[in-house]
Image (tube, rainbow, N blue to C red):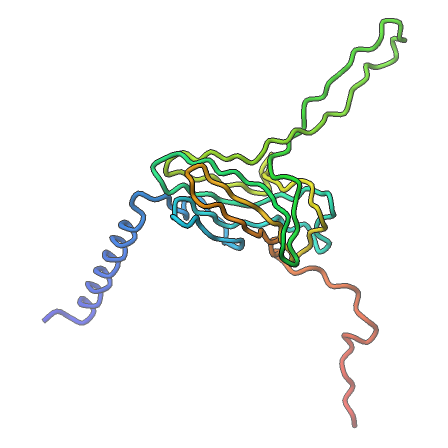
Length: 221
C-alpha cells in the first residue's frame, strides 16, 4: 500500500493534467483573450449574438471628477476578438441615446494632427520676417476596424493616436456613459452599447475638512 503522501501527490498531478486538457480543448480554434488583456477587466464585456466577435473592456478613460465638457473628445479603451475563420470589419459610431445618464457624440474615430503647412513669405518682404505657418487642422479617420481571421485588436487611451468619441453632445461625467453602435461586416446583428467612464485606480482627493470634523470627541468626567 502506497504512503498517504504519495497518493495525494498523484491525485493532485492527475487533477492538474485534466484541467490543462480542458483548457486546451476550450481554446482550440479561438483567440485567447488572456494573451491580449494584461490589465483587470473593468469595462463592458459582451459579444455578438452568433458569438463571432467578442467585445471586451469597453470604457471611456477617467480624466477626473469633473469629467468631459460638452463638445470635447474622450479616449476609449476596447478590445475586439474575431472568433471566425473569415475577416470581419467592425464599424463604430454613436447614436442619440434614449437612456438617462447616457450621452451621444458626433462621431467615433482616430484623431491625428495634420502636417504643418508653411507658406513662403512674399518676395518684397523684409528678410527679418519669417514665413507664415498655418495651424495644422486635425484629421479624423472613422472607426472602421479590420480584424483578420482569428485575430484581436486592442485600443488603449494611452495609444499615440487613440480611438476616441469625438464631439460629445453633452457633458460626460463619472457615473455616466456614451452611446455606441457596433456594426459588423459578417451580417451579425448590430450592438448598441453604453461605454461607461472608467473607475479611477485611486480614490478622488477629499476636500478640506470642516471645522471640528476630525477632532476627537471629548470624554466626560
